[in-house]
Amino acid sequence: MSLGAFLSDKLKNNKKSSTIPDESTVYDFTARALDGTEIHLNRYRGKKLLIVNTASRCGKTPQYAQLQKLHEQYGKQVVILGFPANNFLWQEPDSNKEIAAFCERNYGVTFQMFEKISVKGSNRHPLYSWLHAKTGHKPDWNFAKYLVYEDGKTVKFFKSGVQPLDEPLLREILTAGSSHR
Image (cartoon, rainbow, N blue to C red; front, side, top):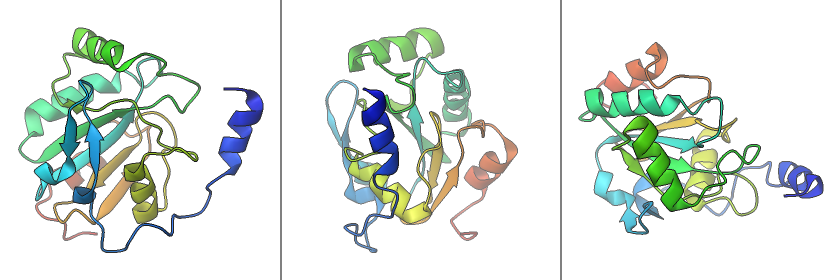
């Protein structure tokens, strides 16, 4: 990506999407797993979801280890969904197959990972447009987190610097229901 294209991307789409119906939920979306299988997010209905944009060549990449630990220890309370993205300084240049091998080899990732997508700009995946519309926040960097509550509509944003096992995020995950919106 040229510097001009990068800057153009930064200046575009700074407002909330008006094409997303207010009554939509996270369960209205589909995405492809790293192996190409289409996954309907409605399979996670009634569960908290932690949606994370990931990258393999980022200073925050070690967060994969905490995400895996969170998955192993609290998998009954939250489902982790990883979305590789090459939007921040091209830190996820690999193919889906290479991403899968990297995650498994280096971090033993067993939580659900999806095909590489765009999380910002004009070619942003519709799920990330919805997350932005719900929270007013775009990913600030790789490993930004969106916690979607059991109702599929309530979403809380956590910046990339918040570690998966940090107290504020863990407290939200472990609190029953979505009563503290």
